[in-house]
Amino acid sequence: AQKITQTQPGMFVQEKEAVTLDCTYDTSDQSYGLFWYKQPSSGEMIFLIYQGSYDEQNATEGRYSLNFQKARKSANLVISASQLGDSAMYFCAMREPYSSASKIIFGSGTRLSIRP
Amino acid sequence: DAGVTQSPTHLIKTRGQQVTLRCSPKSGHDTVSWYQQALGQGPQFIFQYYEEEERQRGNFPDRFSGHQFPNYSSELNVNALLLGDSALYLCASSAVLLEAGAETQYFGPGTRLLVL
Picture 1 (spheres, rainbow over the protein chains, first blue to last red):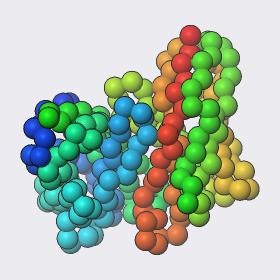
Picture 2 (picture 1 turned 90 degrees about the vertical axis):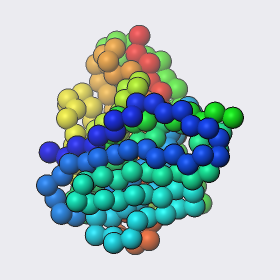
Picture 3 (picture 1 turned 90 degrees about the horizontal axis):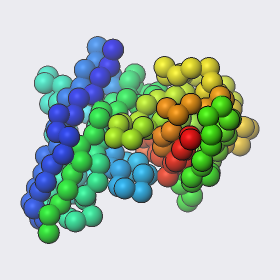
Picture 4 (picture 1 turned 45 degrees about the horizontal axis):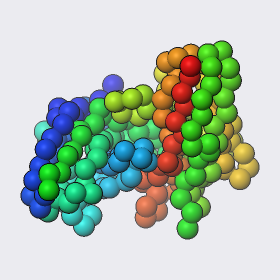
């Protein structure tokens, strides 16, 4: 059965520093998709970045990058130059098999707090 | 381009009552998924609708049912409400066709349900 593990329940980071949020996953399928979502206190789940299992390059979207290590089944999110507005819950998630319409499985989340 | 919309934003019900939540997908999307997010946890997949039929279901009892309309909008119905049904209910839309951006599920702002 597929599973997402986020081992950091909470993190505090100084503004303008880079931060890495950890995520490991477990799946027996060869094709899958990995996501990171941001959830501010308002509740809306905001899509940040996507990595397909066959993508050779690490995904990047502005200040967000995904450090994809397939052999380790790791998909860490890196946020460069953190901002106060980055304070939120962050969820790592996985979709399998490789299809746009399959369910997404979420980890338990990491609460990121940015200090001014 | 309108994103995913959900109504109502908040709802208070008592045990044993029934509730209906509504979702309109993002323009161009034909698949709707529903998730339940209890306080402090990651979202849990309830079910997914495509072509007006339930095509995937998570580990939720039959009290949870849904419907998809010809315009792709969807309803989530919960019967015989329990205190444990109190949660944020998120709707996500996606497109079956694999095209740029179609790999991602986009979420609405959610409906906060409180069962007393």
